[in-house]
Length: 609
Image 1: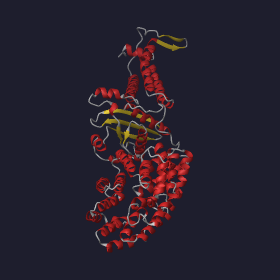
Image 2: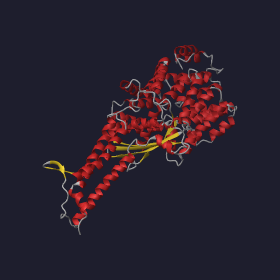
Image 3: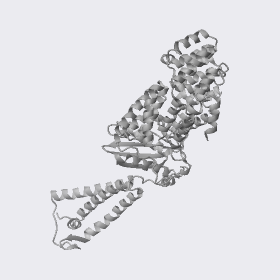
Image 4: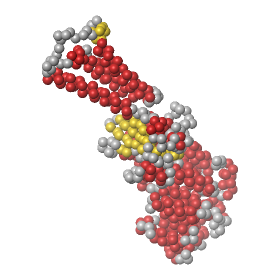
C-alpha cells in the first residue's frame, strides 16, 4: 500500500519536525516570561501577550517549513516530490506517525490549557456582564477572607494555607475603602458546611474570598476566587504559582488583583506593595505562621504555645522584625496569667529588638506602651506609643489594648466603648471582644446591656473565662444576685474552684446578707492566691465586709508587684463611698498616676481624636 502523497510531503518537507521544535521553544519562552515578567514588575497581560505571539507564529512556521528548506545552500524552496517517488507502510512508519501525531496533540492541549488558566486571566468586568444579576463591583466594600484549603499531597500544610489567607486579610485591611473581617471571625467557619450566603449573612459582608494552597517541593500554587455574597456568582478568580522564595511577592500580587477586581482605588502609590517581604528564610516564616495562628490572649495555653513558635521564628532569622514584634506582644500579655516580674524582662528584650529592626513595628510599639505604663507609670509616653501603634498597625490588637488598658483607667469609657464596638464589627465572632465590651458597659453603668453582651460572648465560647466573670458581675450589679448565684453554680466544678469565680460567688452571698459564707471564701482566697486581675473583686469583697484597710492592703500589694490589676483600682473604687476619700487610697492613686490631678493633666496633654 502506498502512503498518501500529502503525508509523504509533510515528512519530506520536515513540517512535523518544525512544528515540534517550534512548540518546544515557544513553551520554554512562555515559562521564562511567566517567572521573569512578574519579578520585573510587568503586568499579567504581558505573559498572555507572549502566549498570543507564540500561537500566532505557529501557522507561519508550518507554512514556512512547507515552502522552504534549510541546507548547505541556505534557505531555498523545497523542490516538489517527483511523480515516481513514494513510501510504503511498515510497522516502524505507522509507529512514527502515531508518535508524531500524539506529540503535536499534547503540545496543542498544553497551550490551550495554559491559555485558559493563565493567572490573572479572568476579568471581573466579563463576569459581571455575563451575570447581570450581580451588583456593580463598586458596591463591594465589606469582605471576609476564609481560611484557604490545604491541597498538598500529604495534607500537612493546613497551618501554611491559613497563614497565606491571613496575610491576604491583613494586606486588604490596609485599603481604607475596604472593611475586612478580622481573622477570628473569618476563620470561625473552618470545617463547617455553611454556604457562602450563610457565612456572609452572619458576618454582614458583601463578598467572600476563598481559595486553596498547594505546596509541592519548593514551589507553591495559590488559587483564589472572590464570590458575591448574595448570589454566589464568581466576581473574580486567579491562579498563581511561584518558588517559595517568592511567596511575599505572590501574596502581594494576589492582594492587588482582588483590590483591582473590586475596583477600589488604593489611595497609595500604585507600585507600593501591600505585603512587605518579611524574611528570606522560609523556616522562620513557617514558624511565624504557626505562632500567629495560635496567638490569642483569651487562652493562656494558646498564648504560651504561640510564644514558643515565635521564638523558633526569630531563632531561624534573628532579623525578622515582625516575628520579634509578635513575640514581644505575646510575652507582654502573659502578665494576665503570671507575675509581672516574671513576664516583663523577656517582653522588653523582644520589643527592643523588633524596634531596632523596624521602628514602626505595630505589635512591638503596643508592647512597649504597655510595659512603659506598667513598669514606669509614664502615661503620656505610653499613650503616644499606643497611638503610633494604631497608626502603623495591621490589625485591631493595638486598638483594643489601648481601649481596655489605657482609656478605661483614665476614665475615657465612652471612647473605649466606641473602639471596642468598632473592633466587634470587624471581628463579630470573637468572644474576648464581647467579654471586654461587657465589662466596659458595666463600668459605664449599663448592667443590662452588659448581660446581653456577656451572653453573646458565651454563645461563642461557653467557657470563656472573662465572659463568665463579666456575666456574674453584671447580674449582681443589676440587682439579680439569685440569677448570678444560679449561673455560677451551673459552671463545671473546675471553673467554680477558680479564685476569681469563687470571689464572685462570695460577693453574691454578701449582697444577700450571708456574710459568713462570704467571709470564709474571702479568707480562703484573698490572702493566699495570686489574683492578678481578681484583686479588684477581692478588694470589693473586703469593703463589703467592712475591712477597709485590708482592701487598701490588697491594692497596695498589687501596686508593689506592678500587677496589671492596679490600673482598675480607679475604675472600680473612685466613686465608692467607703474608700474614695481615704488618704491611703488617694495616695495610692497618686503613686500610679491615676489621681484626679494627674488624670486631668494627662487629658490636657494628650490628643484623643
